[in-house]
Image (cartoon, rainbow, N blue to C red; front, side):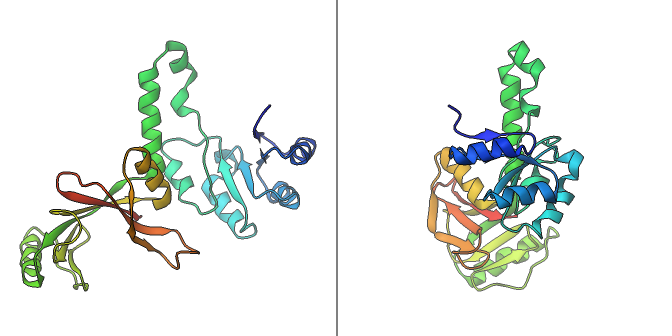
Length: 241
């Protein structure tokens, strides 16, 4: 009755049975030989276990070259502290861990503690951080005046763009009333698509005409997209870290 199978190692009999029964299977691998055996069977996503003990991020980086079409799900030694290092890799689809559901917490019925640890894991997954604060100005002259004032606090004025001027990387002043009643807040994240799905589950929607990509939309991930709700007069957008 299982809908998918995840195993710690690569057992050819188990893998072949699952393929024959059309059950998605994610066998554990740690080296090129096991990965090649999976690729030969048409598998494109494999478990990487035990991740930390098998070389962790460095090993997955090394595997990306010879196996460009394979993604991995690292488990084993993954924690809130190193989760961000894994999910930033292009060949990592997902990660697994148990630190947020420790046996002693379950035995004690400490659901609040489990909730706190799980929330921390979610935030670590996204790597949210402040990118910059955007301020609206009515025109070019007002924007330059704003930039000059902000520079008094040690944030140097940068060469202007067509639509805005930055003070360092912390402040962006728009040369006209941009998105948001007062301005906007840029939030960095490892993966804009993943973070957008998270925000949508919490009531936000994407402003599709604000989307921009690192390359062509068909072949590259999102670089930036605005959310549809303001917070205290500020629009918010996600930007790839």
